[in-house]
Image 1 (cartoon, rainbow, N blue to C red):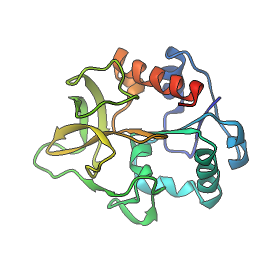
Image 2 (spheres, helix red, strand yellow):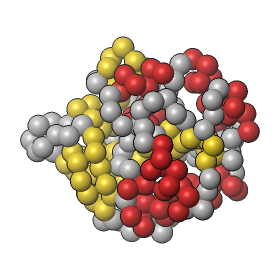
Image 3 (cartoon, rainbow, N blue to C red):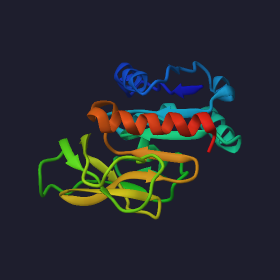
Length: 200
């Protein structure tokens, strides 16, 4: 079972459609305790980092407990940024902190927000990106981006070079919207579903 977190900052309908195309049906937990049976957790999001404040201490504890049980965690767009320690967009709101580093505003060398298709420069093997060649285009819409840390498996350039895909044993994140990224995006969602189903 894969849980889709609704904290009021994402288009859950399009994420559900994307996962349905990947062969998975998601459930939306009402309470943190509803994550107890989750094999995977998806944190979507668009908009301002302050929206993640809705994921309070109880939600954070439930997500950490799920990770301790071996569940997989997947952050999409703002959800990826929340995986880090914080964002310059709102210094008063802490991220989940499962990846060290912060998110910063893209420099105004080019148009910000960065909206549209851009290439993924895949730097090392990735389970989330299995079957996806380097140079694949994905659909972005964001103004802030994450530090390039050891967890970055793909980079993208728009005004600056930033981490567009991050991955650890259990934690995955994409700065773009896979549910809007055509067949390649569906493949990434399918890869996440497969990782959750085999717990590996």
